[in-house]
Length: 111
Image (cartoon, rainbow, N blue to C red; front, side):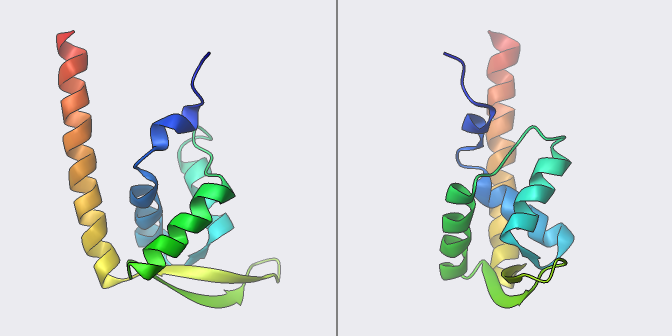
């Protein structure tokens, strides 16, 4: 049985969401998911069942703040913004990601 492409996302959702909020400013959950989908040439699809609990967790951790607003289509939605603590966390997440990918690359080059 082949693995689903999103199986590789485990442990990277925070990194992706925080990075999207840094580059794109305040966004609602659907917008975050769509942005990730588009920026990855549709290779990654973030499911609501993963995204919204992650956003809630990041809000509790004070990495993001949220306010209610209106979407482009006029729907009421919660918009998420990166906080100063979120910027620090993003730097940590990026450092971990770089270490992980460097380690995996070493194995791929050796084996």
